[in-house]
Length: 353
Image (cartoon, rainbow, N blue to C red; front, side, top):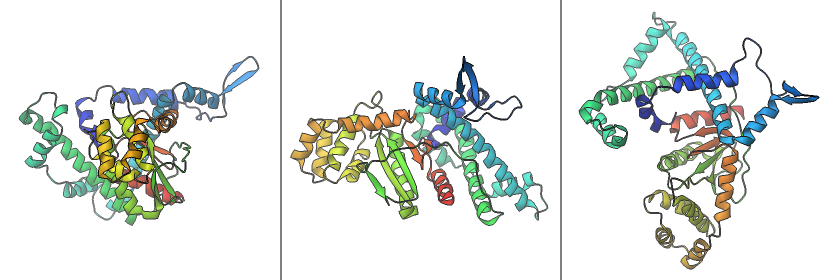
């Protein structure tokens, strides 16, 4: 789960459970019968048969974002449940020789690994998230923040414990596959990493999006960790309704790419998200020692506006509705996921290969 949404969910929790339950009823309820496959006939009109695959294709055509979101939610719910079952089995194996029940062993391990939340951490969190505090003072918000940070540390400790047991305990294989999407990667798409890497991460991003800024160092760290096994590909998806400078910034990055400087210019844009007006974009080109006359002509003529639109159209057809959205070998991950969660998906993909 992207970490930036966690605290907001503590403040606004009503309805989420009902929403997911309703989605599961729509997509997964079988009333005791075997789940329908895509080739099953779900309706007939005269001698014309309509299959579940026909319904899925029509839904995807009518509202790609809704279809992708619903499909992902069902997978995410199933995967969370599967991970819980796997963790419990690993804990049970580890607890066998301890003289404790599985639950008691887990609690003892997590208590040892979960550090107490400090006053400094509470103050730092409050200052960084004051807009979400709904007018609360730090003294009134402190208990809720402490609870949230404690749960966060406990979750991290549990994740680390499971990771240790998966390495040292009985072998674990997962065959529940995630929904996958075929994404065309053009030779002109900016990328870093080995073009023949077994794992390709396609990132739909927006230069004015603060959560995309958070994703940038994560992706670079992943590439450093996995080396030639991972390739990262950039796709434009400026959210023009809320980020009015993002589309022109994307054009500017293509103008820099024309001179072989996409990634340095990409980093410069993310380092100056509050200054993305036309004059700023031209200044960054000068600072990076580009041919400014060529760059300015490119930018002023909107030479690459159609290429930016192509990225947006590709993302829309895939159901992208927010940034950043990553596709790891076609597996969608919407949001600024932490390094550990993306790495876990990469490890699964490498295992498949």
